[in-house]
Image 1 (cartoon, rainbow, N blue to C red):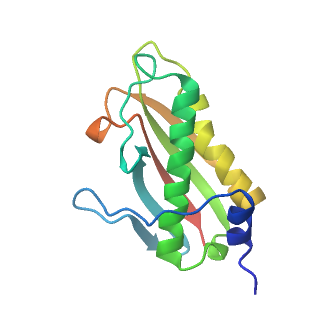
Image 2 (cartoon, one colour; image 1 turned 30 degrees about the horizontal axis):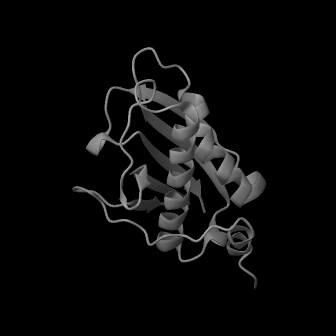
Length: 152
């Protein structure tokens, strides 16, 4: 059987990086029943935290690019945890935290970077419920953190 999601990733020119280890006392993925919960993944650039605050030293398009990079890391963690991305029936929920000033109001547009890529990769199964929050800070000063829930 062909791995359809791998084919789609290849078509999109996406090479999945090795999944990152947890940064503290938790696991990157946990399954209960037919649901997989992925821990929050922070944006990284060149292997280091992608530091910034939306509305201060980072614009919405850059934040959106950071969120897209997180989507790739989330997909990598899913693949590592499941063995095959074809086991994913649907992406159920995404929660995005955006390191932003109190005046910044485009958190939803930033998290679109992740949501849009999930739809491109998983098709209709990538359509999900979502929350996007502005927060005062994210671990290591990262600009965006995103967690994901999937059905298998």
